[in-house]
Length: 354
Ligand code: NAD
Image 1: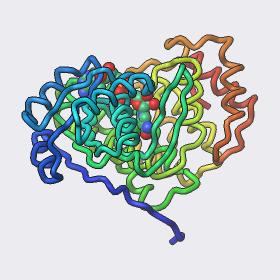
Image 2: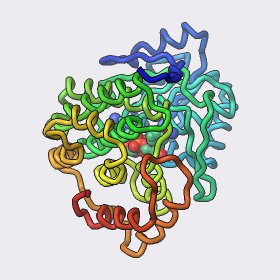
Image 3: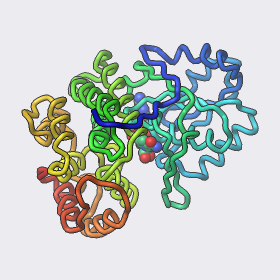
């Protein structure tokens, strides 16, 4: 067996149906008595329910979390946290809300208890992306990792089926890149394969019936494992391309990941025979070909397949390729501008990956 280094994630995780009901006990176990609850404006009702659950141990709700963690919103939240003398922050929502929880926690050292309601996986990572004046910067610090994560399956049932599909493929993308990451190891590969398998099995059932609670449970479990992969390894071409296309051209996060994944895997495929085999093994219908497996999954999920459907313009393709090649990151196959341009063009047009 190869030699390797594995750093385990130090956060406490509670997983289950109605698991957020354990929050009051968990806070009192840690001596926390003044929680500020945060969410996006669309999930104020969920945030209010958490406040009611905590009763006197909640000091308020801040429902202004937004995509890409704008620092002016973080400043507003910090002011509220100071004024209410919060001793911890409880985030309830997707990656955007988790981002705000991380941004508050890293600035104040307040413990962050995260209740994720999508499959994005941010709760398992020491990574924070923030935007100031439209410019996004990303940093990595072990202190960014939430102190505790509560996976409450019931809170994911309201996630619309379309967003469940793309958010789930976003999670799969973390695990796919972890399979061939420069710092991957046997433990992470186990988590990655199990995470992909769980999501590939459950997402089609969720698209058929969003209230299928056993599929919801399996998907959230898969998302947890895939998030752990994201937090533990260095991501390559796929995540960088999504960052460029999503960030520079304002395309939606999970949808961009979903469209690009078969294309980036196809690009790296010749350089990663073991990851190819691993991925094909866990994707139903792959028959030894992971690209076929990914395409078959996306077909079953009925997701859009063209970046132009989300507003990327044909004239943006050249600029996206230039930025993608300029960024420095490790990738198993050399990143060549002409090939990347063709990859983006195919994804833009919705043509099959190759
Ligand atoms: P999101 O958090 O932006 O959520 C999208 C919308 O869905 C929001 O309006 C939200 O309130 C709503 N929503 C979330 N859960 C819901 C539910 N269960 N029911 C009904 N509505 C629900 O989307 P996302 O894809 O989870 O996160 C994307 C953001 O997270 C991006 O900014 C991305 O960069 C970031 N992210 C960061 C990391 C990291 O490690 N730092 C990892 C993954 C994603």
